Length: 156
Image (cartoon, rainbow, N blue to C red):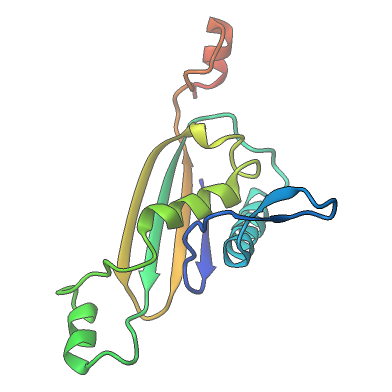
């Protein structure tokens, strides 16, 4: 299992922007915030992988998102956020944060997103903004296995 913490505000997967490349042809570009966040995820994931190649196994992904309540909120609202009477339901959307995290780990932790067999995620209020990521190898063969011999390569 690998585990790492991404400090700062979580970034939801942004929409690609269309612009012109150097040759004048239309191209799709990632927005800067998304690219920066995914690069940070890639860096932190690669650090945890310690030079190992991406796994071929199925994986279980856990993403715990902490959002700091706004300083501009009245005391009663900050209190409600602190004692879990209130939960963060605003932007960024949890599914789009997960997309950014997964795209940052693709080809570093796993080969392709289709290896993620389970995602567990929470978004809660916390003292600071940040995202805890955990990836666990599922001790089962992925359905892509082509032969019985390959099946046993994936089992413990």
